[in-house]
Length: 155
Image (cartoon, rainbow, N blue to C red; front, side, top):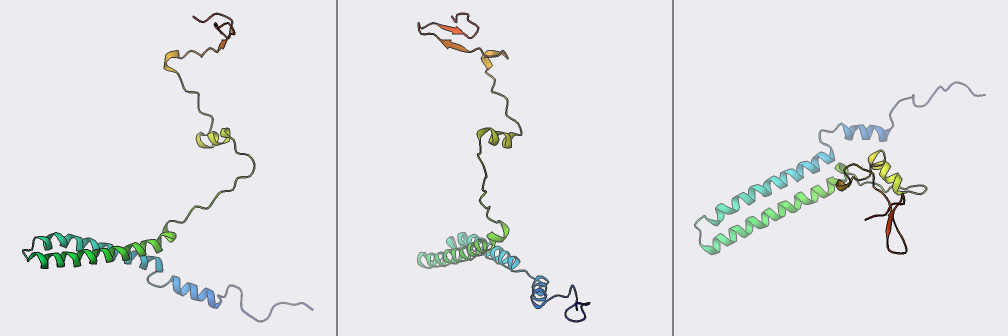
């Protein structure tokens, strides 16, 4: 005989996984925020190092010492930029999701594309030589003379 439920978890009570997700979500820093912050810090430090390269070049040190100091600063800048690049690459899928492929069912015609792009078919282009008049069709005759669609000869 089925009766009213008397034991077990009450409705709406969170399970262990939900509790863990809530704890992660309520943490002070989210993983994406940490990645973006690391990227910004590394990039900012790289810019600071690059700004210090010029003064190292004109510091008045002997050429060999000056070259070594500049080389170290350039390597440091490149390493910091590499760290920033890795952080940016790892954070990109969360900030800029990839577009999924669209599957079309049925035939796709040019008219459908034009209507989707413009809302309605665009008006035909106007030829400035016609001055707003409708163009007249010209038919070629076998004898080489062209006549207009209404039968009059074209000069």
